[in-house]
Amino acid sequence: MSEKLKVAVLGGGSFGTAIANIIACNQHPVSLWMRSPEQAAECQAARENTRYLPGYRLHDSLVITADLEAAVSVSDLIFVSIPSHSFRAVTRQMRPYLKPEAIIISTAKGIEPEGFTLMSQILEQELPSHRIGVLSGPNFAKEIVQQQQTGSVIASEHQSVISCVQSTLSSATFRVYANSDRYGVELGGALKNIYAIICGMAAALGAGNNTQAMLLTRSLAEMGRFANLMGANPMTFLGLAGVGDLILTCTSDLSRNYRVGYALGQGKPLDEVVSGLGQVAEGVNTLRQVKQKADELGVYMPLVSGLHGILFEQKKIADVARGLMLGEQNYDVEYAGKRS
Image (cartoon, rainbow, N blue to C red; front, side, top):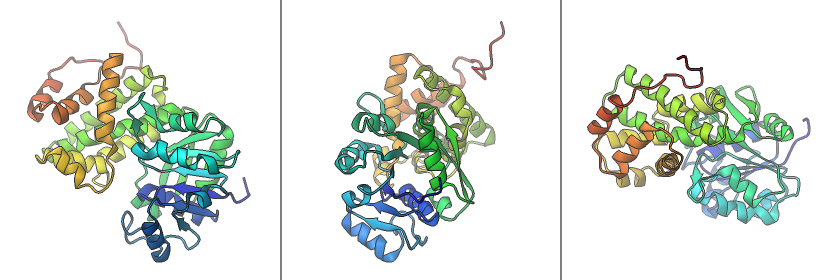
């Protein structure tokens, strides 16, 4: 696709800013929409998102605005980088301004509690006539704007959506892979936040490499087991949006959810940790929803149940850890075929 598309990115957080900057560097006309007029004006003047990505100069052609109609009404491609709790409201807000042929991409990694609804399903419900997709992967915004080599995944049932996003985002430092399993890619992005909290907690408690390797691998098994029953392809979790994102989020203090877990492992109360973060940590909300859904479906998710017990049932970390180690010893790889 050689023509320069008009693009809007909704959400002035770290990832939305990073994606908008990539698109500007690729010479596409792009607007970054922020809810706060004051923040938008400040970033537009300073050429820097001082709140979320301080110290990184934004491309001169990137337009930063608080005017939603101006941002989306001319756009062929729109990325929605809004936290899950505001995602539906912003989608409804932009609906009257959209071009009929506009493509809408979710980058949010969360789940709406009502009906266990993923963000692209909100797009389906609110914008039924538009082609949609999901962008997800092991993508720390700070490293993207530093132009470190990064891979991501665009998932859609429409090849036109995949091609459009690949041509708009791909660069010498940002590679975009394709996947048709939109639900699986999106579930991977949401679920891994739970396990990042667990791994952060384990690190704070002094867990060694053996423990972290076990946690990562069993987290992947739980994700695949849950996703399979939810209708996704468990093989999706072997890719960037599954194991790739899991490894990244569970092993770095650049991850908000990892930092939440680390602080909890140090004995700090959950409310204090979340309020002091300054950004949304989706894993805490996702944990509640996944635990409820897993119980409904009868899915065996001992790590999810253990973390839920610690955060919301006043269980002691040591007791939960002991229970996990002494629980049922099951198959290592569940989709490899079982021999009698």
